[in-house]
Length: 374
Image (cartoon, rainbow, N blue to C red; front, side, top):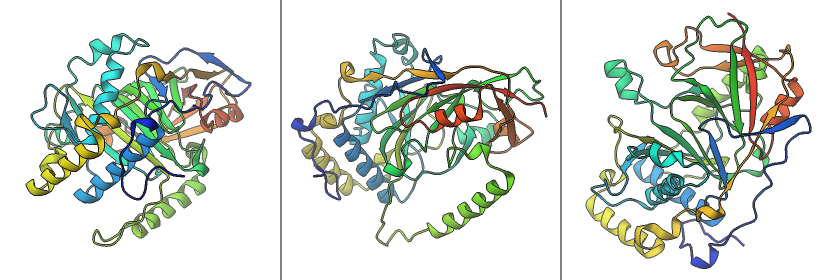
């Protein structure tokens, strides 16, 4: 039976035991195991499944309460001047554990000045074009591209039918934008595909281009198929609009809590407490303390020794093949740093191998491409 009803309930200590985790080391027979790509880390079993569900519900409740999907920020202790919400405490617990990670001792130094966290929630599986999270106001007002230090994705729930169908894709060496304009045929591009697994935490450099192709094979569709999908998405966007006064029914597809760490606060981003009226805030804080303990300790991540660092697979290199990936870039030229809104990449592995890795249900993979000249 499910441990939670329609509203977030208390997580009791008896639930905080290590759940069996998926074997993420199993991949296809045509790939080899490699070390983690530079500055990209993936951990499984970071939060207990019951806690993931509470965080999902609390995040959804916050979105509806604010009637907004905009990002929020908070300052990490001891730099905060107000209390943290339960979701913020959970994020802080994961970051604190990462900083003390014996898997990657460089994280402690790297996080020393990252005192501000920006975060948001999404539970719809939707196509996200390749981009970098930036200070949007800085781009608009001073034409500057400013990215966070690190970006993170915490996967909370994935619909059964989407297992192996909704990865996050990171281009670890492509920073701030697709800026190598006019690249020749020897230009190599690395792509890291990370399957969505509940309880998994992905961390990568904040300046790295990343995307969520929907469907997973989106970049290999024909022009006719792509145009058809775009029309469907326009129709869905229109049909999904709802009156905030009406009951909201959510079909969870790919629930994720996303958060960035900044050394300097991004402009014009609200704090959750500042969006609430005083009497509602006081009541909520009391309820949260009763439900989740002081500093929401019952929603903290699992101890570091229970985390499982996930290994990566890599395709065996061959000559470029005819299968071309068409990567759509987000935003205008000032944001994407490319004259063209789409870049074309040729895989250095067979199309079948690439599709197997992109659609794997658990194992992250490093796939190498060549950028095709314009």
